[in-house]
Length: 560
Image (cartoon, rainbow, N blue to C red; front, top):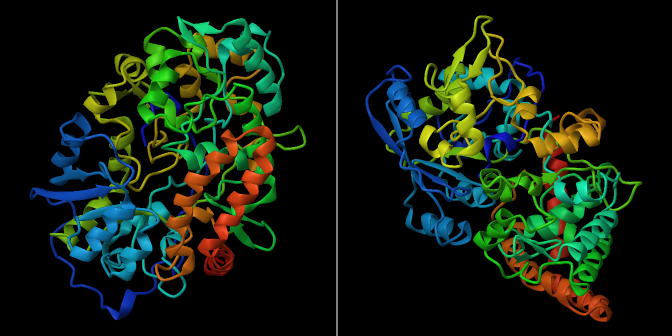
């Protein structure tokens, strides 16, 4: 995921280091523990591993400063492969049919298909034999890397950061600072109050820098699950379970797009569209077009996650348009619903980096993952190289050089050149706020660091609302319970189940049919929405809900 440094998600939580005795139990499909190499982990013999990373889009030639230092320390070079011009719905089946896999692979939904194809290495015996750094880093959470009750193998090392305290907010309905300042920093809590502000501002300023003002825009062609799906459940105060709604008591699950509450969210969007407040290009524009609009400063609000448009914010800063950055207020559907932007759903394991059975050197590939869990690796990936990117001051505190911090703030290309913060996700990573043996944090993200990274316009807005950081305006993380099964979108779904087979087809249907309910006439909305809901049943959605409910319940028991 592309994020500028000052917008990185920030976390802090004490890490329990005791390892459960059974966390590594189980070897998959009757295989025996492999004969492990006697060579020392971290040997410097050069090796290049191909890594298919489903979330990557930017070419990475592995020539930046941090990448070269990783190679110097480990002998390992990573050759990245990304889904350019295709998706995993086509790419992974091609790998499976041909049996041609990279050395490492990171995927999400197709994981079960790879397991069924016996494409992935069970890392359990490796971890038991020489995975000391992995055991230390994951501790009692290592049990959550196990695949499922029927197959407790460890095929992946979870990509989510260990420990998660949300200091940096990803508001799903941010408002331009210029709009709030124009109306004297109003205390707004609901989405309709936002609509009132942006409509007034657009009427008063129909153009910004010679371009038509856009009250609200969506990136619903490429990120419809976020802009149409997640925006609805966040406005309702629901946790992020991906495409699912799960009852917190009974653990009954259903595809969230079927929930009756969603109808009213899309009725609300339909009203905005018909009143000319929603960008008519929202369902057809490319990601580049959407980012260009954000970067121009003429989009007053969006309904998406910060990481989706973070690169455009960097352009605004570079162009001196700081007042066109966004304020992250606790906006929900109504005042009786609290914002859950700071909620921590719980570490889920689930998805992460896997080693395939076609890997040219499985021993060496595992040793590299084990090294990624060392303090040395975590500090290097987050802070960079000592003497180049940071130093220790007279008190022993690790500090980034001022000139490096300046480049991080103002040069969107710097991260490609330096490689700092470039190799944390989806590799194993420590959470923000956790401290290494020197007493310094593993990551560069601190509350003080967030405050230092704000522009003058952001500081002015925060001061007006009596806050130091945006998270101060939201409920604390401790106010929300953690899920006993983690995030539902990381629950493993068997490849031969209805929930797996029909899911992608259903998502394609929703991507096509749901926008029609937003752009139809106001008087046609209910008929169009009924038609849309009825169309889901051709994909056995009831059976899908039943199967997924059983998977969630099984995971609750599995993690006890």
